[in-house]
Image (cartoon, rainbow, N blue to C red; front, side, top):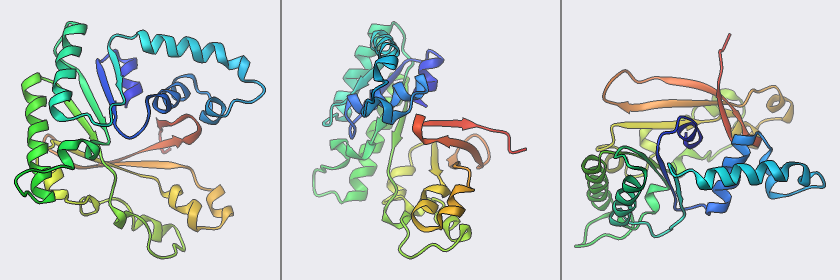
Length: 243
């Protein structure tokens, strides 16, 4: 998503609370240059051949005034608001998209005042985040991890068993608090991820690495699931025609 926004010249602030800026940039370069991620982080003998391309692309990204990458692990909602306002001034326009990965790591969602319980604290913080988006005229995309219920507790014997782990709202811990305010809720699911850990190798080898993206909530249309091809070595999610 971040790469597509950059390609379409849509102003983007990417807040990577969990991952370092270096790791995030390596993944972005792998995606944009179609160079296997492993070749970037574990350089081989032919690294010199791709180094010039990597450096040129990195320089272009860093000089792109409409793309901002932050790795501040203590990014609060109030600090984020200041970042957005500064970014809007620098690019000379109001609208931008803000991605927060992981939104659950923001201090506002982990440190609560006045004896609020976890769900109440999340609801207060998500309302504040929604208010920032509305008042500043931006869209905010928050990334969450599913709870432990999304991980198999028993052996998986076939594809049917794997499909039982397709994400649902219930697998989002404190789901009501998290998804009441957002206008869209999307989940992703890769059956092959589970197959690699459970099924015979010959079965895995015959599987395409399909990612399902499901819309669990939206206000403007019907709920649906679309499929794409996941290419792990480039961090690519590519649309495809099933036929």
